[in-house]
Length: 472
Image 1 (tube, one colour):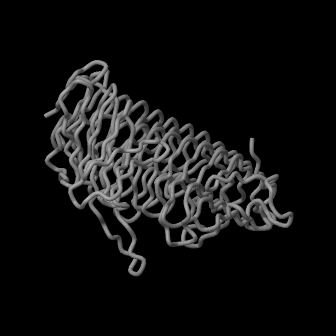
Image 2 (cartoon, helix red, strand yellow):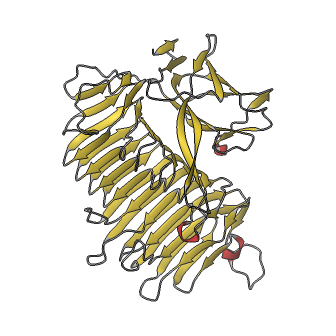
Image 3 (cartoon, one colour):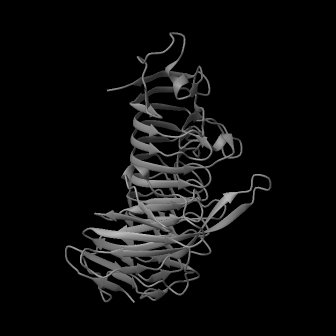
């Protein structure tokens, strides 16, 4: 049952774990508001994966997830049961949370909801993902004619699911309440002004979780997407897509997080993604999706890529009728991990133009990259990967990367690779690029025969023009 206390300035709300979800016993979570009794949060199971570099198979791991809502200050005490606690950290590190460790319990306080990863003894799989929401102030009514309501329990709702698919009409909102579990692919096709929202769990066991096609003004908000058999969210040829506050896990092959194809006016905001492929991929033509992309924003989020890229832009396109991606903003992002053994698929932030694509006017700002396991910090290239492309891209131009901070020692050299004289990379500016505390600037003190890029390190080939490093 849903539990709550002290509704007002200091409040905590918890939700039951649906019967379809396995619980986890690695962690005990106690949440205490000021001058109030504690609440115990029951963690549940998500699955994450690592690659077997010999066979290519996935090695799956259980990980723990805790979800609750609160307002006002709280104290959190988390006890780990699988081993003595030697070290305990709270990530993203940029939040500045330094827990107190007493025996096998780590303690810290919070003033507002956020998404955190609790990592014990440097174990990146037996982690606790702690997701917190503000208390809902707008009550969604079960009998609202514009709401397809799913309450606590498994598929406990007012809408029909056909062959594992829930089709959402125009003007309707699917609401999955806390404690609710929806096992279906939620599909928006040729509709407008529709949504899926709520504090419950969406788990499409036989497909991707959310599919948006040829639609407008679609919102996906707050739900936890738990190990779908495909992408967490796919949007193609759609305008006004808003993906807000969701959290998603995957462990299967091609387990991308959010993939946008040929979309305009899209906002991805306040999400947490831990996936077994690209966390976020912004693409042009593939399958039945056609058309240019424009005005796409990704912001205020945390990304953990167990495979592939945290952010991947480009790759797919339309060689016979080349397309343009114009106006991408990526800002205020914490990149928690990147692990990709294949050099051709590395890059915490990758802009890879293939299939005649032109990618232009990209602004990247306030990016904090933690000490990821394996890969590159940056990979911008005009690509012709014959596994996925039928031609090289046309170009990448007008990219600003501002206030990117990397603290770590595992990054391979970054790459900027134009293809030829007709397919270059032009006008790339790094502003306040900080590598392990050192600002990279063309006017920095260095031997005159050194390149600023050597201090990243970054290699740019002869088809990269107007590359600069500045500080302010």
